[in-house]
Image 1 (cartoon, rainbow, N blue to C red):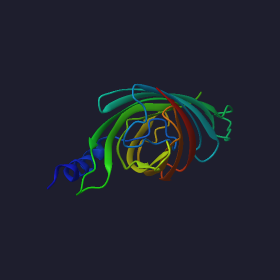
Image 2 (image 1 turned 90 degrees about the horizontal axis):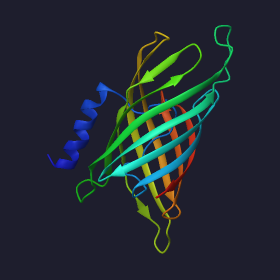
Image 3 (image 1 turned 60 degrees about the vertical axis):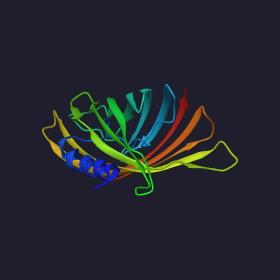
Image 4 (image 1 turned 135 degrees about the vertical axis):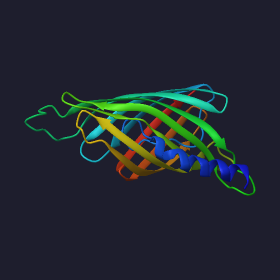
Amino acid sequence: MRKPLLAVLLSFLIAPLAAAQTTGTPVFLAPYRAFRSSEFAGYFSDPGPGWVLEGMYRRGTGSADIGFRFGIGDNDEQTANSPNSTFFVAGLDFRQRVVTHNQSFPLDGALTLGIGGVFADHSTVGRIPIGISLGRRVDLEGTKTSFVPYFHPVLTPVFGDTGNDDVLFGIGLGVDIRFSRQIDFRIGAGLGDYDGISLGLSFTH
């Protein structure tokens, strides 16, 4: 079996050990970074009920990078036990390139893993993520614009104060659009337990 295909298969075999999106929002990662050293990004997402605003800082070295995510959201659901529907999200994730496209396998791939959670007045929900992102960059000839369509399957064990420990599964679909060396526009959508859509803008260095 060829090495790229073996790496993909091994990634799916170890996926049940953890999960992907650290904050539970439909913000996913392409198989490689759009920056040389670092980036700042902002995202607006609709993960079902309510909305979430997130900020992200990522820094890379070699074929890997690490990201810090934080944000605030509102779920539009108030109850007697939780009159305040506002919550906070925070997470740390890591991305490592593991597959490079060749004649026998047309996609690039990266492993993603991390830890994060959702924090509200009456509950905290934690996530320990791992997944794999697969896609390929497409350059528009004669321009500085390029596209990276990708898909990102994830398994997510969930735990916390609610007592509803569970394992979620979802598939992220996304496209990163690079207009220049400094600006990336990002669109994402989740299927399965990661429902919703997201829009993001990144400034790279």
